[in-house]
Amino acid sequence: METVVSGIRPTGNLHLGNYFGAVKSFLQMQNEYKCYFFIADWHSLTTRPKPENIIKSAHTILAEYLACGINPEKATIYIQSDVKEVLELYLYLNMNAYLGEMERCTTFKEKARKQPENVNVGLLTYPTLMAADILIHRAAKVPVGKDQEQNMEMARKFARRFNTIYEKDFFPEPQSFSLATKSVKIPGLDGSGKMGKSEGNCIYLMDDTETIRKKVMKAVTDSGPTMPNSEKPEVIQNLFTFLDIVSTKDTYDYFNDKWNDCSIRYGDLKKQIAVDVAAFNTPIRERIREYSSNVDLLNNIAKAGAEKAHESAINTLKEIRHIIGFHA
Image: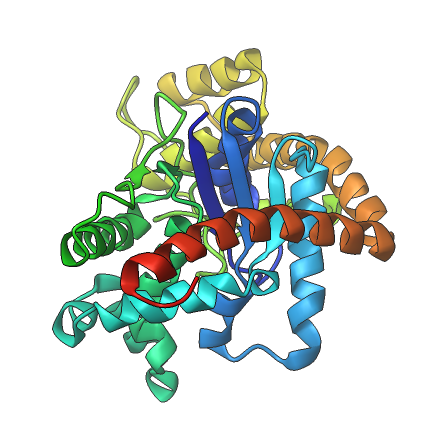
């Protein structure tokens, strides 16, 4: 069975974009692959989170994973910092990485632009830590978004470089993949781009009905169609994307017909989206609250996951040490 690895940084609650992107894929993958899903608390240090939020944030993501249906009996779910072997592999990969190639990474340049007061070395070596997370389990596949594709290419490069330097066919080259035949990009409520925490345009899985209503009613629109059957501009197509993922086909067709005959009322469209998003969120939100209130359960699941991940990681690291020349 092929191994799959994926992680998420604990920098806030999961939103609809996370659910219909990574999490929905995880739900299928856990039945078909040997999966390691981790909460990347080390990665979050590049943004200097408050110490009291480290464990709290990890528990939040863990509770949301469980509430969405990720099953710890099927997939290994763990917190990154519980598997210390990752740091040793991170060190080895850094020794074979070059400053110039790291500085050219798009993600580094973008993060440095967004946080000029905190351009830390962790940002620069983000790709090697990400590669260590993947290669420690010798993963064959990694579900990632397009914004992480360059980092995935770096992971493949580091795997090839290790194999070449030590003349061993040890690491597989992890491939990016998606189970969906058509990638669903959940738009932000600001009218363009995708839903993202840093953009402040999210509907979170924990949002209640009134919060959802207020957010959706503020979504960007235009003055409306002037010609029958005209093409929808991006800001309107974004709203129809929400209809497509949370509403019934009849509802989608109703508003689509209203668009095509130029009789659509955006207020009615937004109200319907708000109602349907709230209906989708409610059972997940209730399960999140249930899991979040049981700290002992979360700790036990994280501990059990860490033990499984540690077993995989130490086996890989023993071979790596031997290949490099250290005592295993």
